[in-house]
Image (cartoon, rainbow, N blue to C red):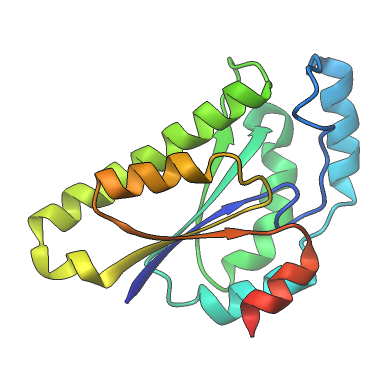
Length: 177
């Protein structure tokens, strides 16, 4: 079975750098600078690195999706994820520069990006019927509010998915066993 992994970054594979997204906070320059400072000392959970090594080496594709904007966090994010590139290459999907950081905007954007990934592979699978039952999307996130929407999308595209909530480093130990 071919696997496509989609990982959230903050709060899932690294410690949280942003304040509570559910509070209506103005993501201004000062708040972004504060988050950037926090991220400088924020390293990948060792448990996640072990999981990635054991499970993603042979993955069909790996995506990291993040609420970070590339203009502020691109360099630090690349640095933080660099150890994973020796295991398996991946693609990072950053939050757009022109959207506000509210919970609604964030979840709508995230669902839109996952939908784009689903559509891309749906077309490939549709043209190759033999592959259809040989692909699964494994999605890991610390915020699960959008899981119902992702399930609905997967059903619409007739895709197999596995949604995994991750609340901290200890959850990666459970996923590795």
